[in-house]
Structure formats: structure tokens, C-alpha cells
Image 1 (spheres, rainbow, N blue to C red):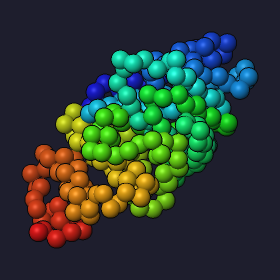
Image 2 (cartoon, helix red, strand yellow):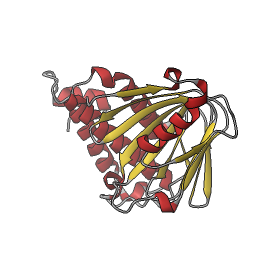
Image 3 (cartoon, rainbow, N blue to C red):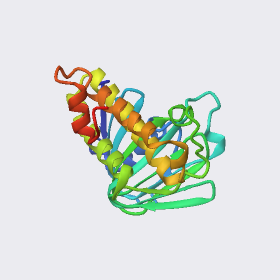
Length: 242
């Protein structure tokens, strides 16, 4: 995998932790203002790594809010779709006049090329996944009505996506660059299928096309497995060899 980074406010004096945290948030997420609800005491921790083109960050911190106005968006920067998947606490994402509150077991998604805000009104532990926006729109997926909506995670493809995001972050330190890239591609495919399911566009993507995406993802993740075969894929995906 690409080199992971980890930072913690434990290394700083209490009076320096809030400004240091704001600087980290600004740099890590491409320009975000943050505030602490007026709190004086604060501690926070972040660990981040890459899975191919995806950036995965685990964040643990006291209550805080982040805001990105349209003025902060730089026209030249690469656009991402950002997922927040709480493990502890709640997150409230607001974008395009909608607000989605999610808790552990669910996730939501928003567009970094537009203005948004994220409220974390209690101590939180979140997994944050940044997926290049181009990967979601290149096959015709319309995103406008899908941002800042609860995606779920209790069942269906959204649950598979959530589980895959969590396990990938956990295993990243032990993955080769090729395996990490394959895992990132699989996450992107699962996120896209979750959004298709959310949007009710199942008719635009046939079951056969969806299965092809799952097969591609499985192959990418197991490409270096000498036991990889049509039979193994069929068993893993619960489908026929044909």
C-alpha cells in the first residue's frame, strides 16, 4: 500500500491541540474549516492510507463541525465523493438543501466539488472514504439527488459496501500495492451499485451487468491468487459458471 500517515493531538500541549487539528483537517480533506462548538478541551486522532485511487481515513475526535463553502472549492482540484461511515457517534451531512444523519451501521455520501457541512455533535469515530468522482459518473450515474442521503448499511449491497470499506482499511497495512488497488476498485464498484440501488435505477443496470461488476471486483482482489478459477468465482459469488 502507499505510505500510511497517522497523527494525534496527544503529542501537543492542550492549548495547541485545537489549532493543530484545524490545520490537519484543512490539509487532509482539501480545504475545510472546522470548529469545536466553542469547546476548549479537545483531542483527536487520524490515520490514513490509500487503496489505489481511494483515500481511507479513520478519524476519532471530540465533537466538532466542518464546513466547506463554494469559495473554498478550487476549480483545478480533483473532485471526490466523500463517504462518512460512523463507528461511534453520529454525523449530520448537509448538502444541496438536504441533511442526512447517520449512526453506526449506516453511511452517507457527499460531493467535495460543492459546498457542504458535517456536524459531529458528540465524540465520534468515523471511517471516511474518498472516491474519485469521475469513477462514479463515467458510466452515466446521476449524482445530484443522491448526495446527503442516508445510504443505509443494514442490508443489501450497501451493507456489503460498508463491510468492505471497514475490512479494507483494517487490512491496508498488510496489503501489497496491487492488492490495495484491487480493493479500492472493488469499493468503488460497490459504492456505485449502492447508489444505483438508492436511486431506483435498477432498470438501467441489468442484473447481468451488476454481476459482471461483482466478478470484475472479485478478480481484481484475487488476481495474484494461484487458485483463482471460474469455479472459485462461481462459488464465491453464488452464481453458475456459465
